[in-house]
Length: 216
Picture 1 (cartoon, helix red, strand yellow):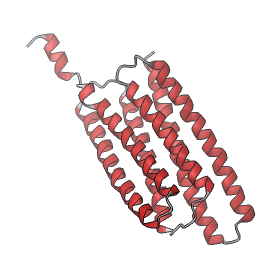
Picture 2 (tube, helix red, strand yellow):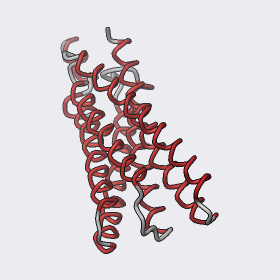
Picture 3 (tube, helix red, strand yellow):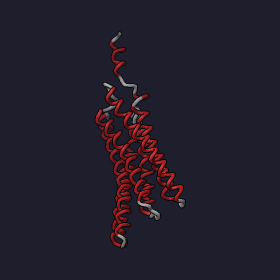
Picture 4 (cartoon, one colour):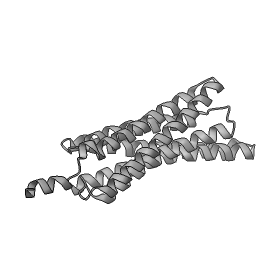
């Protein structure tokens, strides 16, 4: 066996392993965010419940994809970029899915009937951040369009800043105007889970920016 053949044996088939898994995971998050937006804007309680069930199924799919990435990380001697960055990116994408599911579960378990403007707005921001996350992840495979990745990361940071403002304003209004303590707690927890999902999008963007710097 030639030296080149030996080397090729250890090189991971990136385009058939890591990058497709990352793309599937990011696509899954976009699907979850789309269902979330549909749910919070739906007038039908039955449709919302079905949407929340769908989010649960998609989150389980995301868990499976994250687990596959971790397994591949353990199996491959050479990786397309730093191992800690692969792990961090997979974890951040999975965290976005976790917080989307967490928010949806709270809406369902708390029997929320009024889907306020801040809830709808934060859901839309999660979708925006998820779409840009997916765009950036798709560009990682060859790093030819570094500008596109950077632009997506900038937009994700902007989305997170907007979500911070919406969350802070909504919580302030709850403390100012909401007289029902139980309702206040329910809505604050839901808003916090939604806002944290945008934080996780930003975490993923930070990992990708780190990858760009290391591979410049």
